[in-house]
Length: 76
Image (cartoon, rainbow, N blue to C red; front, side, top):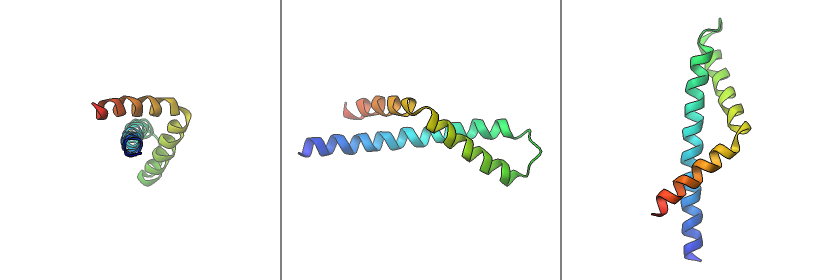
């Protein structure tokens, strides 16, 4: 039981790292893409956040793939 709990905790940790990294990367690229708009800066920040969340929900296999890779690295 301890081994299963250890693997679950490592997977949750790798999933959180891959999810946060993907959100940050998508947020930065969305922010760069939206800076040319004629909106206020707070509106651009909010729009970029929504866009990054939307992109993340479109490609969950990318997040899953990154988390599996990180899990393998953490278990070595």
